Image (cartoon, rainbow, N blue to C red; front, side, top):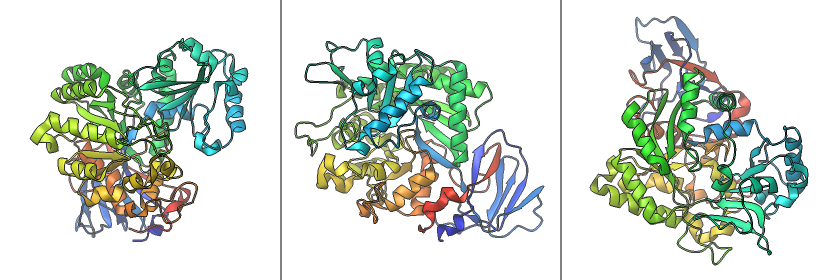
Length: 533
């Protein structure tokens, strides 16, 4: 089916707060997500469940509302496997440096935003990418003069490197005498003074002094993020922690739920460093409900390719002495994993470089033994594995949680970092599926755009943002639209232990409050015009 039929795409969103009505959808192009099932044309909703899905309206079936889809495409709502939800909402309300392509524009945007704030208010987020202006890192001196009254802490797109101005460094007591924290680095000039660039766990030095937002600010951030997500067809998100300091994130989600603001389904994973808190929450409150669930922890074994902190067996191609680094001591990290597993918490582990990935796989093997395939462990990102690692995650049933947009972003410069050999198993979507692996998709928003449409385009075309790979970057790793849709729905539901109640459109499946039809504007679908199932 050519996706031109998707020009008026309708997605069935699993959302609360909508009217519960009996509705009959007819004359649709309905993708059920059920492997091997024929394409349906009719879908009936009764109460909070699917009453029928098939090709013809059953005799005697009545409904309060009939919607003629006129061939439009219907599917399960998208699920995002990895978002930083409140950070995304904060980014929507903050300075946006994502498209900045010069030093001058970088300086101008930060100073202009700072001048619109009250003194002492922080300038945060940003999501800049120094590769867009030649690869040289920014310096605090660029912005100090124009931001003397406001501390500035703007992160790189990958979230593993940031620029702080002198005021922010002062508030965090970061000086030439401050030692690098374990798993982090304070970049310094020739005289030993901090340049303002922080990497890895050094980011926590600043995060610890940023004031906690008020309840009103938190609800504003959540609402901005939620409205954006729902407009893109998302029905559920996996909210993960970016830093160990984010121990209160679950409380923020509870605030949105208790204030009756929450509509989008959310599963929250908190920092593995505070796993005892997560275990206590599960013991006292259970694991939540269909709207807000929890009981997961996320940990970091390494950083990112862009910050050169992803951990590799061999050095970076353009830095012969740099192998990246573990953000946490592997022996300590192993104990965390063991304790979290014993507490029956869902494990999500950030690992990008091949050595980081191999370390995590080995640790999970040691912890789980023969029962590893029953655990539904997750490795987040899994960007630069070895071929052997791909086989192992498939054999063990370890869920591969990837964000395909990163491929068409990083593909502009990744070969400079890791060379042509390691490139062959970078963002290895096809190899993972061919090995029988469990591939799930998401965005890593606000590190990358939240739109699942953009993610599917990236996975199917692998056409980099600079358009220098029109036939695909490492094209052998391209997958089909249907495989990408499955990763965004069916397999994501399995990853959340929800495969019996969500992920596919089947009779008596998915007990929900109601279905909300969403018609996406044609502008959302332009990149699909040339794609086929």
